[in-house]
Each structure stands twice: as C-alpha cells, then as structure tokens.
Image (cartoon, one colour):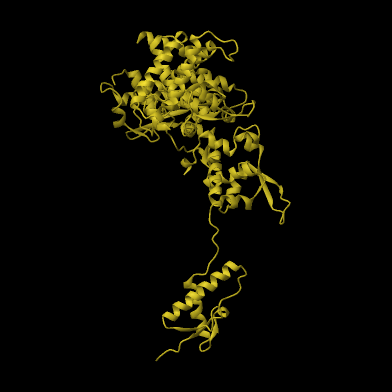
Length: 245
Length: 179
Length: 179
C-alpha cells in the first residue's frame, strides 16, 4: 500500500492531488470550480494510468469516478428525491479541501516553531551536590498498550506449539540396557522387564518400548548381546554375550 | 526555611537551574515561605531573564530554564536529532493539535486517507500525543490529543499559543500573494 | 557570526547553560567574534550573576554555571528521576490491567515466564496494583487488580477506557518496535 504513495509525482493521496490542482485555479479555495476541478483531476489520472500500474492508482480512480458522478449531477437538473443535493456535496468537498489545506499549513507552522534540543536547550547539568536523586519507575500508556499486544501475540503463538511429550531417546535406552547387564549377566531376560514401568502414560510407555527395542538391535549389531524371539509378537528376550578373552 | 523575598527568588532560580526537567509549582512551594506569592516571584524571575541568553519558560504550571530560542543560530550543540517527521506525520500532528480530542476516523476524514501503520506510532514514541478517553458517541471511539511534552518541545506555554486557524489562513494568503 | 558584545554575552550564557561540563575557553572563542575579549566578557558575566541563585564558576580556563553555594542551606532538592519500568514490569502491569482479577500463576502462564517478587513490589510501591481477594478455586489463590491511582496515572476515567486489544491493533501501534 505504501509504495504507491510515491508513484504519482510525490502525491500522498488523491486529496493531496486535488488540493494541488484546486490551488492552481484560485488563491481562495472557497471560490474554486468543482466542475473544472473534476475535469482536471480526471485528465491527470487518465494520463497517469498509461504509465502507472493500474492497481497502484485504485484510490485515485475511486475519487475520479466519484468526481465524474458529482459533475454529472451538477450539470443535470436536480431530481427532487436525491438524498443530498449535489451542491451540498460540492460544498462539502470544498470544505474538506480547505480543512486539509489549513492543517497542512498548521503542521508546517508547528514544525517551524523553535524545537527543544534543536533550537533551544535544557540545562545540560546532570549532577549537583545537594540534589538528591529519587528514582521512581515510570510507564506510559503507550508502553502498556504495546506490551499487551506483545503478550497477546505470544499467547497466540503458544497455542500453535506442538505438545511435545517427553520421549525416551535411543541413547538413553542403550545406557539403560548396559547398566542392566552389569547386574544380571548370564540370563535370558524379557526386554519388557528391563523397561522401567513407572510411567503410566501410554505414549511414554510406547516410546520406552520402541527405543529399548532399537537399542537392543544396536547392541546386537555391535556384538554385545543376543536376541531371541520364538514367534511373531512373542516376547523378546535378550542376553549378554560372553566376553571372549 | 524562613527567608525573605530576595532569598526566595534565589532559591527558585537555583531549583529551576538544578532540574533539567520543568519543575512543578507544587514542588517550588515546598521551598519558599507561604507568605510569598509564588506566581509573582516566577513572573519577576521571568522578567529578569527576558532578553538574556537563557530564559524562564513555563508549560502550564511547570517551570524551568531554557536557552533563548533566539540563540539557536549561534549555538551549535549537536544533540541526537530525531529523524524528520513525514508529511503524513506533520499533518496528523496538526489535526490532533487543532481538533483534539479527535478520533482516528476524524483524522482520516480530513486527510481522506488511512493513517498508515507507524504514523501515530512515531508521534506516540516522541511523546507528543496521547489517548484522551472515549467519545460519548455510539461505538465510543478512542480520542487523541497532544501532551505537555508536545507543548514543551515546541516552546508553547499552552495550546492557546498555537496560531488560530484564522491566522493560518491569513498567513497562507499573504504568502501566496507575496510569492 | 558577526555579532555585538551584548549578543556575545548571551551566546556564552546559553553555551555555559546547555553544557553539562565546564566549557573550555577555546571552545567559547569559536563562538564569539575575535574582536571581543573573552576573559572580560566572562568576568562581566560572573559579576552579573554574583549574589544570585546561580553563579558563574571557573576552574583554570574552564567555565560553567553552578547553583550558589549559599543555597545549600535553604534547599533540599529532591530530584525526581523517572526510570523506565522493566519489560517484565510493563508486561505484568498490562496483564493485570487486562485480565484482572488475575492470580500470580495466571500472569506467569500468560507471560510464559516466572515473575519475581521484585516486579510485583515495584508495581505495588507505585500504587498501581493491589490485592483483590481470593479466587474461589482450590488453594484459594490471591488475585491482583489495578488501583484508582493506576487510572489516574494513565489518565483514564475508568477501565473501560483502556483500548481493547483489537482496538490497539487498529491504532497502528506496532509491537515490533518494542524489541
């Protein structure tokens, strides 16, 4: 949205363009011709459309069509059932242009005043022997508003977080198995018995079973244990291999 | 703390000097005898410094020393100057200053365009505008106004010191004619 | 930079005032016409301020304003300095304002961070928050809310004047800048 502001000869929007065109007509904005202004504006925008991306001038086109509508109503005899007389609409537009013009000049006027830290200065003295510094913490409404938005955004983000539960890593399972075989050396043991079953959560239980099974395969591959299973889905037994000397 | 008018003047002078921020009349009152008229003393002090390199300056009921605006051309003190305000920012500030309390919708109506993200933000960040409560119309929209910091920044004692719209219009026409 | 003695005096006055440290004569010389005798100007200024609440003071060839030593007996200036509330403080205050009555646990849940007792203490000390009774849930936790002083500080008539989160988003206050 912001990019197109710069695309029509530096005008920030249609009102600015209208104001500039109006000022070319008359010194006093109260006496400008809306009919003439409508033509000037339409011509200007028409010419610009040829060189500018159409979507970029959408705002300008809205005003252009409205001005064309207003112009046609001003030229034709007024119907009685119209809600707002065309003259009033034209007058409103004039008043709006006047107001905008006033505010632009008021703004320039304000900014042309002496400004603190640019044209006049505070005492630069920071310390003084008999001045006691008393600190109070301060917060502006602006700080408050900015932060509640911050918190709110964070809260929303948090809702999208995946609920990751604790899982048992394969590394942890390997460590477990090794520790177990230090105690029980020459027995076939059901894998299930080695898994600590303190956990009641089925998700965590499954995680433990899966990683201990993977860990047992890993240890078998390394030649540290043997694995035995009599039939599919039957219990898995593991036994530490005798250390060859 | 029993002291005469002359000492009181000196005390006020010292306090105003020692505080880089404007000092509230309430705080000054604590340091001068109740028998003396603070307002009068402050006016006297203001007169003493009229036409000097530093002036006594006030925003509403807060007072302080500031270098005289006329010194601007001679002083080349580089302070961190903030970035120039955009055209949209200047216009928005003017609308808020002149039509306060004013809703965002009303500002947008005058400019016939949306206030872009950040325009109000910049004015807020400088501490020049603030929320002024809700309008008692349907929808209860929030309204904006200028702050004391705005007055202080632009060397205004109060909003009445801003030129009236009538004055601005006369100014504009004379500028055009002369130009 | 061609100006008369009177202007030169004013310029020196303004420079000495606006600088926190004593100003070197060399630096002052840059700002006054060579035709004028700086030492004499400084002595004149010193005389002007003799017996006032603030004096001109020098160390070797550096000059500045100081409050008059005699003022120390009359004054006990409490300089109120405002320190910005920490991010944790502002957030906690915001959560209390928007979700009150709210328990400490709930604040921590919204912030996803622990709140130190110090944070609540600062808000309590400022008189912005207060206890609002116990929640009628197991454990009966204490709840927090904002005070009238909070409303006063933020210039709000009542809590309804706080813009809703939706309104804040529409105001064009971007949270990006808070980082």
